[in-house]
Each structure stands twice: as C-alpha cells, then as structure tokens.
Amino acid sequence: MDTYRTRSTYQVFDAITVGGLPAVAQQTTVEALTCTVTVGIAVGQAVDVTSTEFGTAPAPPCDTARRVAETVVADLPPLQK
Image 1 (tube, rainbow, N blue to C red):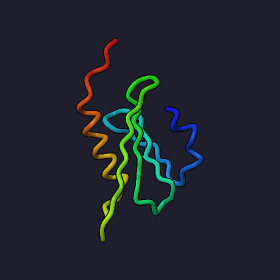
Image 2: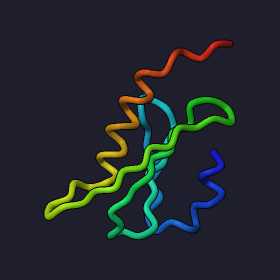
Image 3: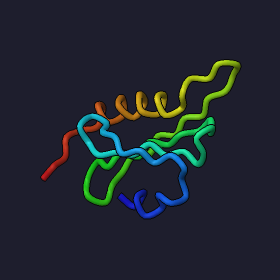
Image 4: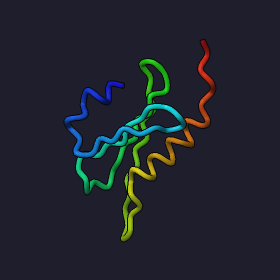
C-alpha cells in the first residue's frame, strides 16, 4: 500500500487486519478526533474509511473507522482472476 510510504507523517500508524485483509489505522496525533483506516483490497487498490468523532464523550475514532471498513469489505464482490 502507498500508505506505508507516508507513515512518518502519522504519530499513530498501526498495522491491523480488516476482514482478513491487510490494513492500517492512522492518526496525525494520538489525541486526534479523526482516524483513517486504509485496507488493501487488491494489488494497487485500497479502500479508505475516515471517521471523525465529536461530542462530550466521543468514541475512539479508529474503532469507528475499523467497524465501517469491516462492513465495506464484507460487501465487496469477490476478486475475479
């Protein structure tokens, strides 16, 4: 994923899996209210899900982004070879 080329710009850059696929959760700072989860879905292809949380007790934004990414990946059609 090209995301790895920019990893030094993020204070949070965690390798995770989403639906069995390689992914990363990234935030510019530890306290950021925004998180992007990038999921590698095929060679040269990725899906980005960004979540921004507001309010008096915001949910961890990476948890929300990961949940949405799981739903998106589960709805993708199978790869055709």
